[in-house]
Amino acid sequence: MAKQQSFIFLLVLTIINLFSTEVIASATFTIVNNCDYTVWPGILSNAGITPLPTTGFQLQKGESKTINAPSNWGGRFWARTLCSQDSTGKFSCITADCGSNTIECSGNGAKPPATLAEFTLDGAGGMDFYDVSLVDGYNIPMLVVPQGGSGVNCTTTGCLTDLNTVCPSELKVNGAAGDGVACRSACEAFGEPKYCCSGAFGTPETCRPSEYSEMFKQACPRAYSYAYDDHSSTFTCTGADYLITLCPTPTTTSKKSSDGTDGSPLINGTMIYEGAPDAGSASISLHAFGSQQVIAQAGVVIVTFLSYWWLFPLL
Image (cartoon, rainbow, N blue to C red; front, top):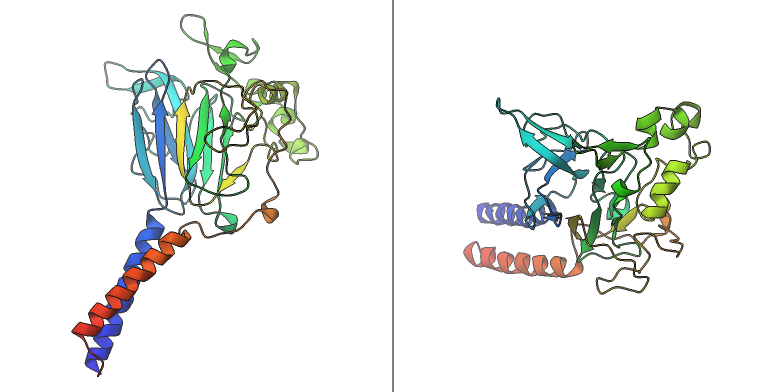
C-alpha cells in the first residue's frame, strides 16, 4: 500500500509540473526598433496582472528585445521618444513619457499622445485579443504581426502612416525644433464629452466618429480611432507569439501577403476593411495547448508512468 501511495503521489506531481509549465510559458513579444533613432519602449500590465520582467528599456536603431509573458497577461506596449537624462539622473521623454523618472516605467502608463499596442492573452474562448490604438493619440508608426497563431481574424494590424506630418495644427505637438513629434487625440486637445465618449456620449449609440477620429481612421484603417471603434479594430488569435515593429516600412498592397494576412490596407487604401467577426462566431480553442503539444505531453506522461511502475511495482 505504501508503494502504491508513493507511486500515485509522484505521478500526480509529474503531471502537474508538466502541464503547469506549459501554461506559464504562454506567449512571447518581440519588439523591434526599425526607426532611424533610439526609442524607449514602455510596458504597463492591466490592473491585477503581475508585471512583466521589464517595464521599460532602450532600443537603439535596429535592435530588438524578446519578452516572455504568462498565459493570463494583459497590458499595453508603447514607445517613448526624444528621451534624455539630466544632471541629477532624472529620465524623461518628450513623447509618451511614463513619469517614473527612470527607464523602467514601474507601473506607470504613457502620457498621451502615444500609439499603443494592447493585448489580452487567453481571453474569451481561449483567444488572445489585440489591437493598435490611436485613442490616446499618436507618436510613432507601429505594426503588430502574430506569428504561429491561428484563427479567422488572426492577422496583422497597426498604423504605418506618419501622422505627425499630416496632423492638424490644433492637435499637433511640436518638438524643440518646431517640427511635429506627436499628434493629440481630440479628447485630449479639447476635453469635450463628444470627443471623449463620456457623459451623455458614453455609449456606442451616442458617441460617433468625429472629423478628427475619421482622419486617423482614413490614414490607419485597422487601428482604433475612437473609443467605440471595435468592429474594425480588434483582432484575435490562438497560440500566437507577437512581433511588434516600431516604424515599420509602409506598404499599400491589397494582395494577400506572404505572412498570411488578408491584404486589407494598413494605410491610405481605397478598399473597405469589413472588420472583426463577432466574438461569438469565432472558433474556440485552448490557448495554452496546441494539439501537437498535448500529444507530446501525453507521451512524456506515459513514459513517466512506466518509469515509476518499474521503480514502484504495484504487485
